Amino acid sequence: MGKVDENKHQKMDALFQSAYDLFLNQGIEKTSISDIAKKAGVAKGTFYLYFADKYEIRDRLIARTASRLFQRAHKALETADIPEFEDKIIFIVDYVLNAMQKNKLILRFISKNLSWGIFRQAITNNMQDDGEILAYFSNILLDHPTIKLRAPETMLFLIIELASSTSYSTILDNDPMSFEELKPYLNESIRAIIRNHIIEDTAEN
Image (tube, rainbow, N blue to C red; front, side, top):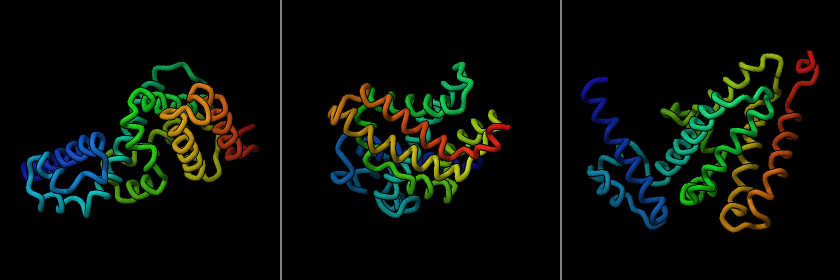
C-alpha cells in the first residue's frame, strides 16, 4: 500500500471510529457530520470523499461491527469441539447475542438497525470486512460436505432477522421474558429454519 492509499485508509478508519464513538454515546440523530469530522481530526469535506451522509457511515458501521462480532464467534468456534452443523450455527448466534448482552450500547446501536439489506449492500459493494459473514458461513459448510442447502442466503436472512429482532427487547427490557428464558425457544426456531433449508436426499447420503 502506497503512502496516498495508506493516508486514505487512516482517514477512513478515523471517521469510522469517530462516528462509532459518537453514535454509541449520543445517538445517531444527535450526531452531525461536523461532529464526526471534528472528532476524527479531518475537514468536513473529507467526510464526503468517503460517505454520502451519516446514514451511510451508520450502515457500514453496523455491518462492520456485526461482522467483527461474527469473526470473533468463528474463532471461538474453531477451538470448540462441536461436530454438528446445526450446533455450530447455534453456537455462533449464542456467542454474538451474549456479546451484545454484555455490552448493551452495542446492542442498541446494532440490533434496531441490523437487517439483511445492510449486509447485502455491504457485500454488493465489496466493503472491507463487511462481507465476511458469508465467508465464515461458507467455511462451516465446507466442513460438512454432505449437507446441501436450498437458498442458503435466505436461511441466513431468516436467522439474522429472527435473532436480531427477538433479542432486542428481551436483553434490554426482559420483555416478554428474560434472554435466558428466551434462548431455548430461539434456538429451536433457528434449528427449524436450518432443517427447512436442508435438501433431505443429499443430506442423508
